[in-house]
Each structure stands twice: as structure tokens, then as C-alpha cells.
Image (tube, rainbow, N blue to C red):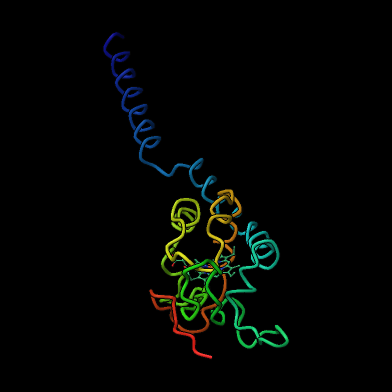
Length: 176
Ligand code: HEC
């Protein structure tokens, strides 16, 4: 009687250790749910990113090849813009212009330097201005929330590759 009880106890012990192992190492359904939720959330934030890029942030206005007379698109949107004058401060060399780089998913584009949501958001929130007189308003854009910068990242990364790779140095010499 005693020995069979001990045997049952042992069996129960072995079973519970198998369950424990499964719980520790087996597929974790709660984790799977989280990543699906995250994926869906990311998909849903693309339209929001598109809205920010086209209107409030005007990313499209600078980073797209626009006809300078009609402002209609001359090529794929966000594939790189026409060179812009530097900010008008005293002492600025007016002949050093800035080319808004390619923000599509093309390999070698400026977006490619920030391959995921986290690095993209960090570039905006902590990266700051790298080119003193660039017309891109980094100070304003650095105040974007993580959700807004993240939505922009999701949207831009969803764009098909287009245009040319962007050089690290965005300045060009402008002669009239
Ligand atoms: C007024 C024009 C202008 C607007 C508006 C603008 N950009 Fe830019 N952007 C530039 C120029 C010029 C550069 C290149 C010089 C520089 O890095 O400041 C640039 C550079 C960048 C870079 C490359 C940064 C790096 O470190 O390599 C990214 C990414 C970028 N812009 C994203 C955006 C996004 C996203 C928006 C909209 C929320 C936006 N830009 C709006 C002009 C603009």
C-alpha cells in the first residue's frame, strides 16, 4: 500500500516536472499573441504615417522629385528631392545647397540607415541636427512622439524601393 502510494507520488512528480519544462521551454502562447498584436498595430500605423508624411511633416514636399514650376511629381514620391537653399543665417555660404535624400526602402537610401522602427525613432528624438544650415527642421521634428515617429517609420519602410542611393554627404555646390 505504502509502496504503491510512493510510486504514484513519483509518477505525479515526474508528470509535473514535464509540465513545468513545457511551461518553461515550450511555445509561449501569450508571447505569440503579443507579437501578432504588435504586427497588427504596426500595419495599422502605416496610414497614420502616410498622413503625417504628406501633411503635417511635409516629408513628401522636400523628399520627392517635384517639378519646380507646377510642384507635381516628376518621379516616385519620397525617392529624393531637388536641392534646397541653406537656412538664411548671416555667415552662411549661399552656394552650399542640400539634397533631401531618398526615403524609400531602396538599399543605400537614407531610410536604410535606420532599418527598424527603434533606430528611426531614436534618430529623430535623440539624433538632432547634423548639418548646421540644413533646411530640414530637426529641432521641431525631434519633438515628435514615439508613436508618430514610429508610424512614419512603418509607412516609409512599406514603400517600394525607388530612386538612387543617397550619398552620406547631402550638400551640393549650387551655381546659378
Ligand atoms: C524643408 C525640407 C525638409 C522637410 C520638410 C523634411 N526633410 Fe528630411 N531632410 C531634408 C534635407 C535637406 C536632408 C539632408 C540634410 C540633413 O540631414 O539635415 C534631410 C535628411 C533626412 C533624413 C536623413 C538623416 C540622416 O541622418 O541621414 C531623414 C531620415 C529624413 N530627412 C526624414 C524626414 C522625414 C521623415 C520628414 C517628415 C517628417 C522630413 N525628413 C521632412 C529636408 C527636409
